[in-house]
Amino acid sequence: MTMAGNKRELEPGGLTAGKKIPRHVAIIMDGNGRWAKKRYLPRIAGHRAGMKTMRKIVEFANEIGVGILSLYAFSTENWKRPPREVDFLMRLPEEYLQRELPLLIEKNIVVSIMGEPAGLPARTQKAIDTALEKTRGNTGMILNFAFNYGGRTEIIHAVKTLCSEIVYGHLHVDEITEDMFGKYLYSGGMPDPDLLIRPSGELRISNFLLWQLAYTELWFTDVLWPDFEKEHFWEAVLEYQQRERRFGGVSKF
Ligand code: IPE
Ligand code: IPE
Ligand code: MG
Image (cartoon, rainbow, N blue to C red; front, side):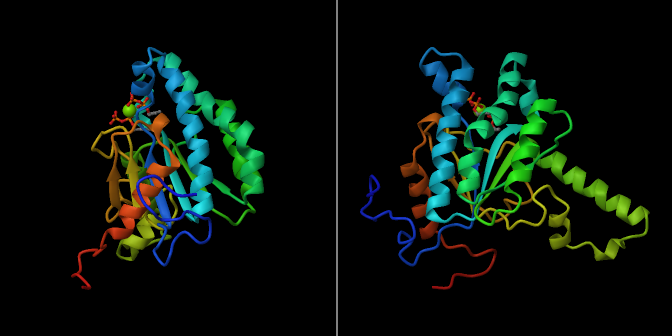
């Protein structure tokens, strides 16, 4: 398959041509509401279209060899939305997993979750727990959903856990390091994202992975999430491959 806008051949396994596929890609799946509005449809129609995009992108990321795909699906701030929309969004994991779980299992994908499970409807929790359990033994791409996730809440959660370890004498304050702190986050010591993709034209992080994005390469597009295609993902990867990551050091060239 040849991707639009560039001559690079895209074939699983052979597509990297010596360039690195980002190990961990994070996506803020945004723009569903505006996509629906443009079509005079209810916002939930946008979320359903966004789910279709998600299915395609999960498959593509897996095909090109991404190690971890983190998807921002529902933020702690999204509870502010109208109850009808929130209800619909809460039902989506169940719908997605019911349909996709066999394929995820077949593709050796590991489902993982970041966020506060408390506060989610029982059915949503159950669907997530089943997916975690059924894919636990897999060894392929980690598909990491941020659901009822907030970056600040995540940091507070880690601080609280660390504090109680200190109070109970299991840990000394001087032992706290950046690496160790990372392990107390929901992401539990996963490598930080190499690339963050945000569609929909918004140039902000919206409380996503505040700690983990410290040195992530950011890539924005005006395309709305339901219109986002594999080609856009690939475009982001190609641009990522052109970036020089210095991590505060000096240029190698
Ligand atoms: C992203 O699309 C989905 C969620 C936040 C759950 P939006 O619903 O935020 O779409 P816009 O930003 O209103 O277009
Ligand atoms: C971020 O999108 C959250 C998700 C995509 C789940 P929002 O639409 O909630 O972000 P803001 O409100 O535009 O910052
Ligand atoms: Mg939005």
